[in-house]
Image 1: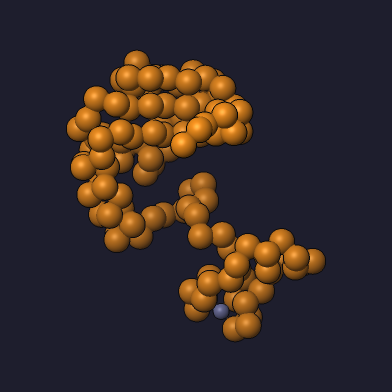
Image 2: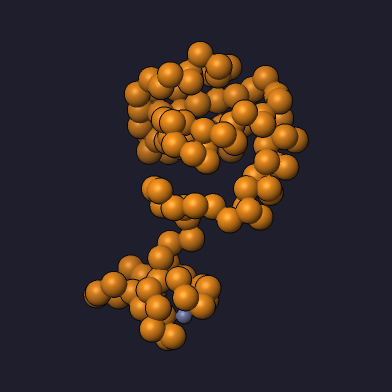
Length: 111
Ligand SMILES: [Zn+2]
């Protein structure tokens, strides 16, 4: 979190205590955790990608928490897929709604 150095996941899994960087800082996953902000570049790139997406699949979010809730409004297509275990208020805007655990849905995907 201090120096932005990257470690692979095994380093984190194998550490017995809170994983620490060689600089002494704490290592955290490179995902946005609840109530953390996203940096401007990430937001801008996300908007660009979503604006040009043919299909948008949103999985595992109730879409009530910023920034996911705001980003979905940039989608211009007609193939919005929402995957959540339970129904969410946003479902009516989707073209396809799948109410099932994410694990089950993704393990049955064939690419
Ligand atoms: Zn460090």
